[in-house]
Image 1 (cartoon, rainbow, N blue to C red):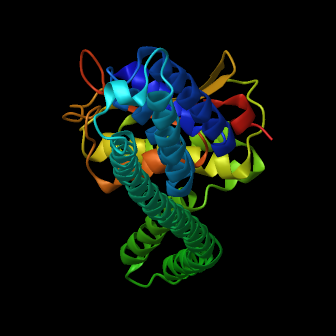
Image 2: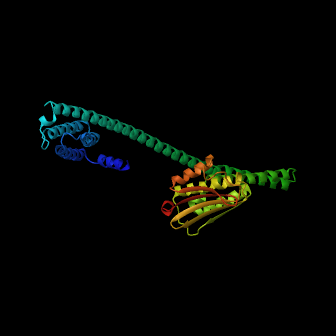
Image 3: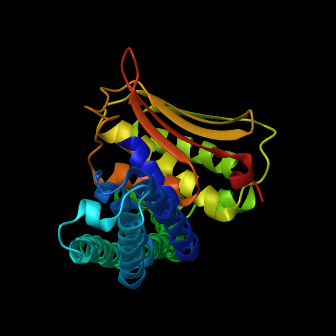
Length: 357
């Protein structure tokens, strides 16, 4: 069966003229066989093979021509078979002509069925191709839309971070300066309320620190000015203060500059992985590493937390899906796995060509 399928596929790739020529040659060879064997032996199936092949590849018109040629050759073979005359074989002289008409009708019916099936298959294939093309276009459109949404989200985070850093933080610094000045005047004039002024100044200082840390998370300034390695080290320091965990970053000193888009995606992947480890996995130690080996750049985030159930099979949660999507955006391979002892490891690996300028 597999050999027959391979033969049919091979014939489908040939031109209709070649198939018709090959089918005509087969019909002629079968006619010679009919002439040699005489009308005692039926060659119906042998004639049907080239007729059906021609009808399948070239269409009904060519199949009809092949059927007519086969019927005529078979009739000639019956009439002029070696050592046999029509009177010796047929009681009625019209019998061979009647048989030829019946054979032609059989050939035409078989050929028309095969041609119709071929037409139906072609129509179905065209419909499938159209639907597939439409689906691929829809998928591409959805991917482009997701990409745009993610880019808009990143731009909005950067804008908010800049507004926090340049707007709110500066206002808080002014308020802290005014509170310190008020405290100094109260102390100089001996007016009660100095402790309250001190408390207000301390609260404003804490607010400044929180606002700056939040701005750094939204807008990693060092990523643009000093590179991904320094941005990851600043991220580790910020996360250590925010979640009271031991978060460190190890980045190779010879790391070449990365593309801006690649850098922001890797930074966001590390940021999301560290946040998940600190908030959900109850981790106490988190290690961010960025390394180059054998032509690949690998970003890894390891923690000693409780792990993620079935992380390698079907990760759930929007954050994990966004990390995986960011990895695909830069041509990386994303992997989440539970470590043998305890904890989780998030890895994003991509080629140096995709990483560097």
